[in-house]
Amino acid sequence: MIIWGIRVMRANFFKRMSSSRGSVLMEFVLVLPVYMAVIGGILWLGMKSLDAINLRAADHWGVWMAGNRFSMRLPAITALQSMFPRTTLITTSQERALTGEHSFLQFIGSKTTLYETRPEFLDNWINMPYTARGESKPFSIPEFQLTSSRYGNKYTQCIIMRTKGSDTDKRHWDSSLVAKHNVWKFESKDDEYPKEWKLELLDDPKYKDDTKEQEKEPKKIDFYTRYSKYEQWSTKK
Image 1 (cartoon, rainbow, N blue to C red):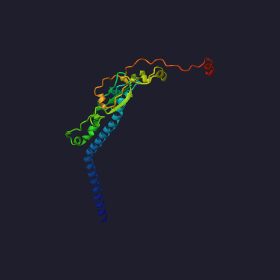
Image 2: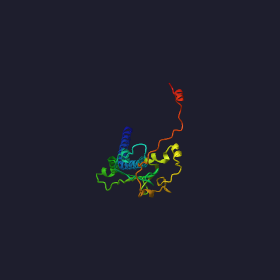
Image 3: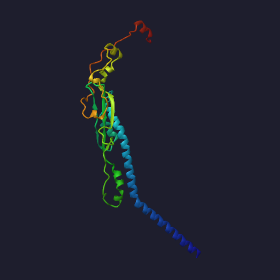
């Protein structure tokens, strides 16, 4: 009798255990699609946040490259395409403004806009609740364009830089030439600066080319010439 009671208790115990395990497994199967959708949404928002950070850096790079006067100016699209591999279209609106044809300084503004696509695996995760039940998704989260401007401004990065042709400007002359030619004041219109560097300067600039050079710089004056014997004595042999 005792043995029979033990067997009954044992059977009931394993029966309850198996039923509880089955119910837990069934609950997990039911909520798994919801978990997948939540994880997919979190990853999608995370990718958008990283793209927004990279977009700021890319926009900054674009405006600096537009005013680069030491090396070849590369179009922003060449660098931005590798930074944003999911983009279908990248647009940049770089503009420059000079107060004169041979201005020493220039004002540059830039704005970058991205049109991206969502990875297919994220789209599948987000729509997992409908896919698991064999239903067609009622709607899809649209992919918005991503721009560096939060408030619809025409330009989000602006910078004041020297023009590429300023190497021949009198402001760049050697001090000996400035003294010889008595160049102490710069009264030309090309040397005038705007009272304020406002975005309105980029709306309809009269001068946009910053590569035009002035006359070549005269030969520098040599103030000191060393004696030949002193040069021989001071030269290493």
